[in-house]
Length: 409
Image (cartoon, rainbow, N blue to C red; front, side):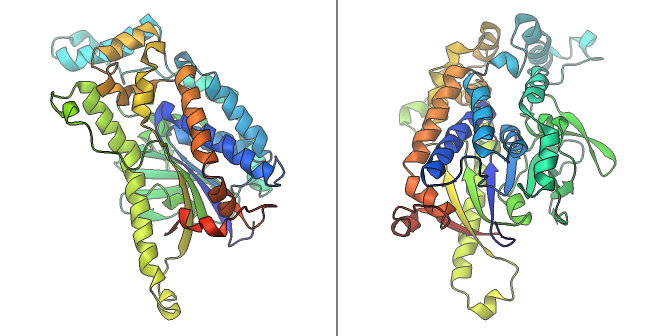
C-alpha cells in the first residue's frame, strides 16, 4: 500500500479469549481470497497486539509474506492447545505456585519459611516459553520488516517498576517514538521476553524483566493502564484500523436474580479482568468516534490547523458472552487447576469470567474460533468494503458503508 494508505490490525488482550481472533482472521482470509486476493497477500501493514493478542500479532507478522500460512499456523496452535502448554497444571506445579500463593496471602504472617522465596504469581507460565519458540520465526520477522512486507509490529507491556505503559515497536522505517501521559513508545527488537511480559495477566502470571532505556524494569500485562489501545497503530502510520475485540463491547443489563447474592472472589476477579482487558478499548472507540464527529463539521481551513486526521475503523467483537461459553467447558480444565479455581468460585457460572481467561483447552478455544468465524462472515460486505477498492468484488459495499465505524487519532 502507499505511504498514506496503511492498514493496521489491533489484537487486544484476554488470555484464552484471544482464540476468538483466530476465527476472525480465518474468515477474513477466506473472504478476501474469494474476492480475488492472492492467498499469500498480507492485508495488514501494521500489526499491534496486547497480552495474548501480542503473541498472535507477532506470529502473524513473522509470516506476513504468506498471510494464509500465518493464519493456518496460528490456527493449528489454538485448535489443539492444552493448559499444560501455557502454564503448569500438574499437582506439584499448582501446589508450588497457586496453593502456596493463596496460603501466603491468607496466612503469610505465619509462614515465615516462605518469606525468603515467596511465589511470584498464582500460576507458573514457564511452559509458554516452549510454545513461543515453536510458534514464532523471529529471523523471518526481521526479513519481512526489512523488505517492507510489514511496515511495523508493536506489542505493549506495563511496567510495575515505574508505573507506566510501554509500547515496544519494531520497524525498518524511520519512526520517531512518541510520549504521552504515563505511556510512551520504545523502538526495540521484539523478543520472547516482550511477549511473556505483555501476556503476564496480573497476579495470575509472573512479571518479566525488560530493559527500557538501559534500565531493568519488571513488566506485566500490556492491557493494564492501556488508555488508548488503538493509538500505536495510528502513531505508526495507519490510515485505517481493523480491530478485533476480546469481549462484547455492550453488555445487556444482568438478570436481577444475579444481583441477589454477595459476589465470589472469582466474580470480583473476573470483573477486574474485564476492566483491564475490555473497558479501555470501548472507551477508546467512543473517544475516536467523538473526535471524528467533531472533525466532520470543521471547514477545510479549520482542519488544516489541527494534527488530528480521520481514521477509518472496522470492529469485530464477540456477539456472545465468552464467560457463558467458558462455563460450559470448565470441566475440561486439569483437575488440579479446577480445584484451585473452584476454591474461589471460578467454576461457577457467575465466576466463569475469570475462567474464560485461563481456559486454554481446545474444547473452549474451538468454540471461540467458530464464533469468530460466524461473527466475521455475517459482516462479509463490511470486510470487503473496508479492504476495497482493490478487491475483485466489492458486493454492494457502498450500500453497507454505514456499518463501518469512522474514527480519528
